[in-house]
Each structure stands twice: as C-alpha cells, then as structure tokens.
Length: 156
Image (tube, rainbow, N blue to C red; front, top):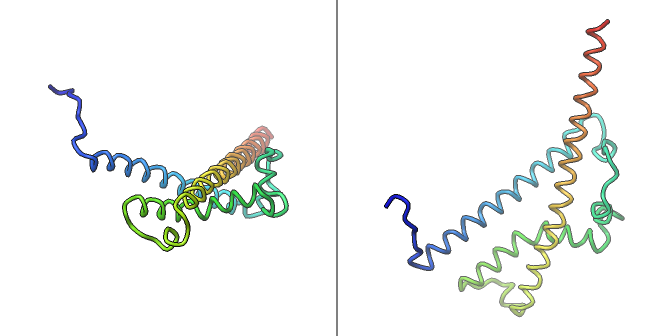
C-alpha cells in the first residue's frame, strides 16, 4: 500500500516530532525578533517612534508605559529574556538532568516561573508583531507618496 498509516513504535519517535515542533517555534521567534530589530532600526531619517502611523493599541501602550517600569512591561521583558533559558532548564530537568535552578528551587516553583515567562514572551510577541505591521504600513505609505510624486512629475 502506498498510503499506509505509520505507527509510532517507540517513545523516541514521538519525542522526535515534539523536538521538530519546538525547533520550528523557536526559529519563528528568532525570526520575529530580528525582523522587529530591523524594522525599528531601518528608519534613517528619524526615530522609529516618530514614524508610527497609528496610535499603539492599549496592550502595546501598557507595555511601553513608563519605560517598561510597570507590570506589563516587566512581564514582557521577563518573558523575552527568561523563556529561552527557562525552556532549556525545564527540558533538562524533564530528561533527568540537573541544573542549579532545579537544585535551588522547588520543582513546582520552576514550572510556575517558566509558564509565566511563556506568557510574557507571548506578550512581547504581540508588541513585536504590532511594531512590524506598523513599520510595514509606514513603508507602504512612503511608497505610495513616492509614486504620487513621480506621477505628478511625469504629467508636467
């Protein structure tokens, strides 16, 4: 049969699928971070905050409020920096490894901290997506304005 179902014969094969999913997720996160970095630094004439096309949504404003010195800002920054390391610590402990974090803190507390970092990473991803979309809107508006100027010059 050309289309027979494949059965997973060992837990190692199932773990391989999980590993591939994690690699894809982590790769997407890294790509999002770099695209956000490039889009926030690409404006050569002015600061990226001055080029915003629209008022940021309430979620974005709450993260940026007071220079990230607020609960939402702390959570986003915490997630941005702790989620990758926390994932490593958590997976290491699940596979029987030992890290200094697992030796110092109770297991349930480590899990709570890691889940909290995932929530924070999700929040920072929302902010990054908004920044990328806003930058794309600025680029499209500048392109449309440039086309309008070129058409006026041609008609003269």
